[in-house]
Image (cartoon, rainbow, N blue to C red; front, side, top):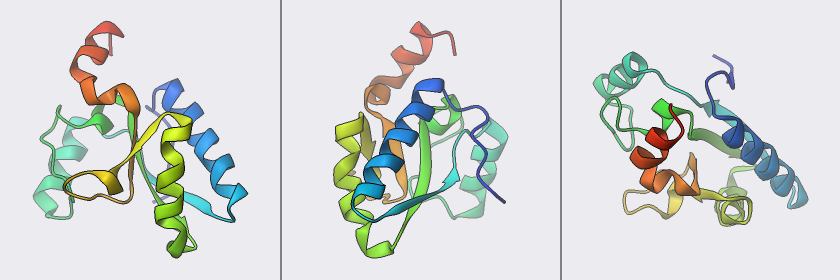
Length: 121
């Protein structure tokens, strides 16, 4: 299924574009695979056993349009693109304690509960 940006916060969409541009400067391409997930989709992902970091429904930054997943081509540039993420205001899941190298989220989503409440999401 192709990636659809529907449901992603406008700032997340801007940061995707900025990371794509930065990736091109090093000869890499981002292939977006996941963005906004409703609660049912999040539950199904957990039930499938395919979730790398299985956040419960309502506890994932994906559920609020603040995160996306992407693979990098060529794959050997994945870490390099991940290191570019902070320059555009993103955190890269490859730096998490439980590494998730396809995951990117906007930086302030670390305090996403407060951010969601402040932005009426």
